[in-house]
Length: 375
Image (cartoon, one colour):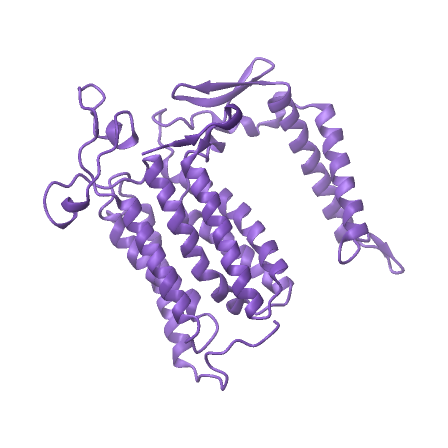
């Protein structure tokens, strides 16, 4: 277990964040290569990946907080909402002006170098929709920059030594635990839903075949997940149950003292130097995700219709995740005596299986198994 890989120039690089970033990079690389072979512009895949990553990470963090935030103050999220309370007076005029200038610069650069110009008025008059959208974006940008400047430029950072990260600005202390994702705290299904919505919307706007693009992306998602779970193992989260006998006892690991499994097992008041032997569910899911990546890559050339690879990816992963959850010890039952992810897995499996058999039941096109060039 190595939560921190190294600290160049005093900046801590966490193993979880590093492996997550490595997984993203490899997934994008593989996807762009396959997109080029299918006649799809790699730039489109890159744009899609950026939006999917941003929305996916935000959704994954929100889902994690909703899943684990408990009553009372048992988790360090208590009071974290205050960082979003812009009515407490901590706004900077300098930050607001800077945000507005950045937005204007982005607009000018887009109109100078972009593929198409953004215009708010033409021969038919003012485009009300675009004008209103621009005003809303400008308002949001100025508020974000005004808040960020006040907290993170004029404020000072506190934390470390096991304490939750925080920033103090004008005498007010803000808990930043909501944003501390470098050291873990993302739920896969929470990121999957907004990332999928981004895929559907952007492919529709760009007039690509949505399911065809999804089939190209789906295997790479599993590749990225495989590296992400290695990060979980190095970070010491998502650990498995204690196991002394049976098949999995041959592959158990012990995490060092003060790790998450160590504290969860109540060993901090003992002289134990490591946790009890637990099942490395992180690595188990990593191997499963990598095997699924290889299978989906093989099946992609044998599918009958667009959407089959996506359906298989969602269905097989949901089934595997459902079973692996029985071996994990870091969650509590939510509904029907099952964990949050198990309940989501059941729904995903049903939808994916129904969609797959629907596609297979339709008459195969004459160019089955082949990818058309272009869109």
